[in-house]
Length: 81
Image 1 (cartoon, helix red, strand yellow):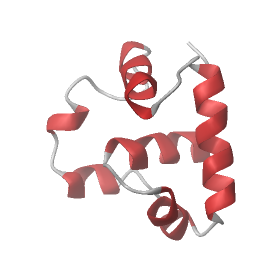
Image 2 (tube, helix red, strand yellow):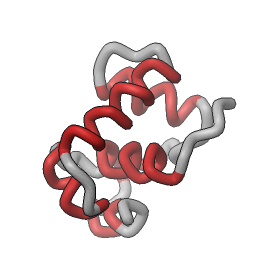
Image 3 (cartoon, one colour):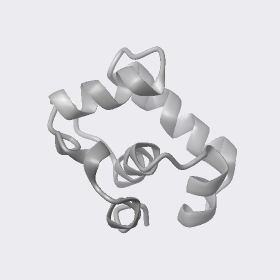
Image 4 (cartoon, helix red, strand yellow):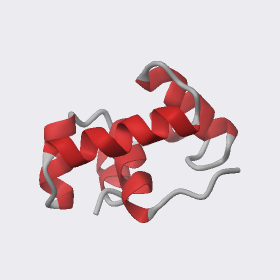
C-alpha cells in the first residue's frame, strides 16, 4: 500500500465526491495546476488511466472505503480540506 500525502488524500476524496479540479483547488486553497499534479501523481501511483480506475484502485488499496460512492456528498466534502 503506497503512502499518500495529505494533499493527495484530499484530492482523492474530492474526486470521489465528484468535484472538478477547480473546485478541489478552491477548497484546498491551491492552484488547479497543483491539484492536477496531485491527480497525475495518483494516476502514476495506482497505474490508472482515468478517474474510475483510480478510484477502484484506491478502494482496493483501502485508501477510501468501499461505499464511498454511496455516501452523501456533504460527508465526503469534510475530507477535502
